[in-house]
Length: 52
Image (cartoon, rainbow, N blue to C red):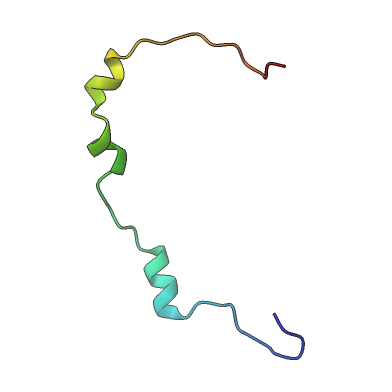
């Protein structure tokens, strides 16, 4: 922000309603990895931390 200029950062009524309204969308990862594939993958134990 430049000194000497005032700029409003508040939302108007319409913008606030749009953000407050719940929009249901399809989960994006569901199309990439099916649930059954995740369950078939093997869990591999790994060490935490860094090496070196």
